Image 1 (cartoon, rainbow, N blue to C red):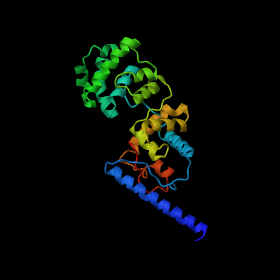
Image 2: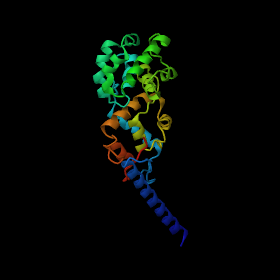
Image 3: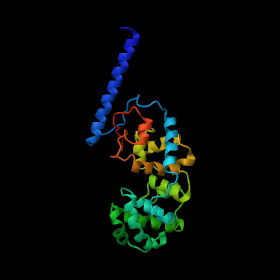
Image 4: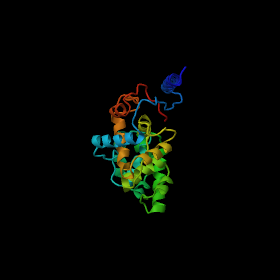
Length: 261
C-alpha cells in the first residue's frame, strides 16, 4: 500500500472516530451526563480570529443599542437588581424591584427594613431568604465602610455578601463604565458553540473572550451576546447547527454541539 493511500485511510478512520465520539457526548448531554465540546475539525475553515470578527460585526448590526435589561436608577439599585437576577429572569426581577426600591433605593434606607420585610418583596426571585439577607448585609457594609456608596472597585464589590465576580463585573461595567466582560450562562454556552473557548470553566471562557475581543467593546458585547442567546441561540432553541451565526461560522457542521455548564 502506497503512502498516500495509507494517509487517506488513516484520516478517514480518525474523522469517523471523532464523529462517533461527538455523537456519544451529545447523547450523554441529553441524558444529563457529563458533556464535552467535541466537534469535527473539518466543520469550519474560519480561524478563531475570523469568527470573532464576524460575530462582532453581526451582533453590532443586530443590536446597535444595548439598554441595560435590569431596571435601576443608580449604582445601588443596579447592584441589588443584579444580585436578585441570579437564577432568575430579568423580567421577574423587574416585576419585584419597583416595590422594593420605593421603600429603599439606597443602602441607608435599606437598613430601615428587616430581612423579613425585604424577603416578603423579593421572594419571587428565588433563593429565599438568602438574597434578602445578602441585600441587607451588603447595605450594612456599604454604610459602615463606604459611606453608603457602591465602591467602583472590583475587589471591594466581590467582598460584599451575595456578590460574586459576575455581579461585580456587571456593576463595574454598567454603573461605572469600566471595561469588564461578565460571563453568564448564555455567553458561556455561545462561546463554546462558536468555538471561541473550550468551556472548561466560566473563568477560562472570560479569559479567552478578553483575548479575542478589543477591550473597548467588552461591556457592550457582553449584552449583545446575551440578547442574541436569548433570541436566537437559546439552550433549547439551537444546538449549534440552527441559528444564523452558528450556520455561518460552521456551514459543514451536522452534529449538535454539547457544551459544558
